Image 1 (cartoon, rainbow, N blue to C red):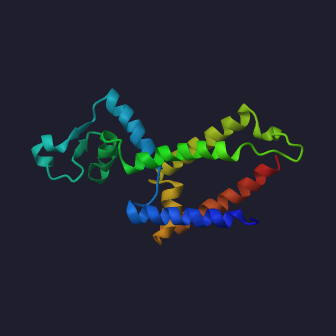
Image 2 (image 1 turned 135 degrees about the horizontal axis):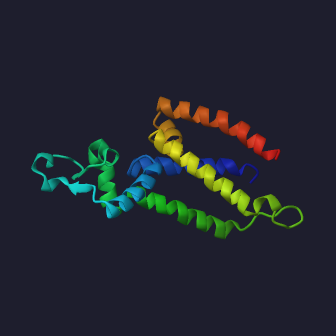
Image 3 (image 1 turned 30 degrees about the vertical axis):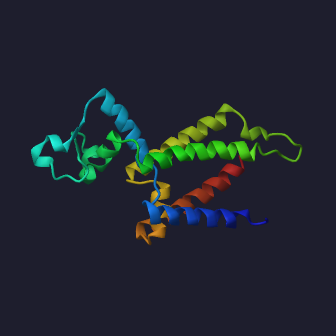
Length: 183
């Protein structure tokens, strides 16, 4: 198939549609906060069940936290921290499983001489990728969402912020990608 991206776009669109239809919009960056919150909860008890506190018994989430970030949105993040068995965590773990299965099925891409291109190897590239990913994640959490939540799910829901975010991402990403190719 000459235009494999079309098939990928259709599969991606259907995946987002099914997720919204049966669960909720796709987004994953909050799960990084949930994982770090679980570690925080183990080290320093910051979350309590609201059923134990009379004035908080009407909270929908059932949890309250002394940490303002975990407590926002009526304690939804606190609830996710205390109950890791949820849709978001399943989606988060599935990303790694999918990447592993993709690596197994796709194999290594070879150049014309049937060799792995040298620029694809080495710790320098891995280090740059890790730093770039960390910066992207920091920016996503700082903005209150992630690329999949803002752009993909946001645009599917006709969110103005989703369209603005997508435009800015492409305005920055295309020149950076073109500049990276010349190095």
